[in-house]
Amino acid sequence: MPAPTSASSPHQPTPPDRPRSAWTAAGPSSLSRKPATTRRLGAALGGALPSRGQRIGLLGGSFNPAHGGHRTISEEALRRLELDAVWWLVSPQNPLKPKAGMAPLAARVASAQRVVGDHPRIRVTTLEDALGTLYTLDTLNAVTRRMPGVRFVWLMGADNLFQIDRWAHWERIFERVPVAVFNRPHYSQTVRSAKAAHRFRRVRLPERTAARLAETPPPAWVFLHQPQDPRSATAIRARQREAETVRSWPRRCAQTPS
Image (cartoon, rainbow, N blue to C red; front, side):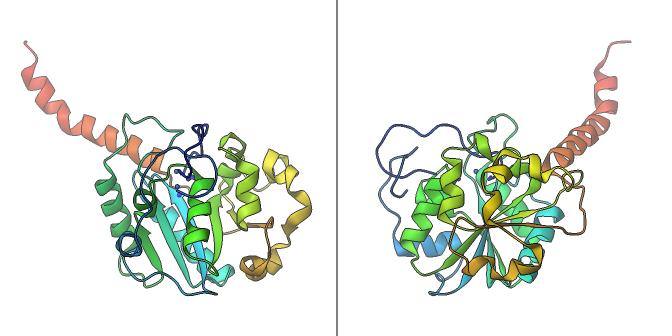
């Protein structure tokens, strides 16, 4: 989501938020917009709003582009945390990432939908766009206010655990909803050195109790090991640029005077 997000009340602008990985409610705000109607929220979710008691994982991010690693985390979250569904929050614009090189929202949503396919429990959403939010805390404030009784869990990769202290009001993110952190290559041995891990070390759940996370009052978090997937959106974009260079090489050569 990174992650991954948002806007809420008309106070001073909130400082830059998450890297993901990119959400209006009570608290500092980044955008001013009328509250989204239930109908608009349903359209952004691609279906009905969840019922009280449902356990929903939120995976925020730019998804520029989406890839199999996002799906792997989602499937692990469904299984290990015993969630009812995972929502991908495709960010309108990640405050920590430049606009240059960022594909339009519609293109990134389409990319995510291709990766998700017909998975019955993973939803690609434009929830942040509907809410008018850019910052994670604002998004969490909004969804918990608009959907009371739903048990939300914030999902993110271990790389974001090392960056989340750059996000706006990052400590309040942990205090708003439980957080599940998924291992990424090379992070397993250093997770304790992350500022956020140290700050919330006393409320870290043992991995074997991960299924209890959604029912645990925040702050609470768990670190989950999983099959390692080295794919990243940054690497995919680099390969795409390289492929475009190779494809355009004969054309450029033909245009070069001999």
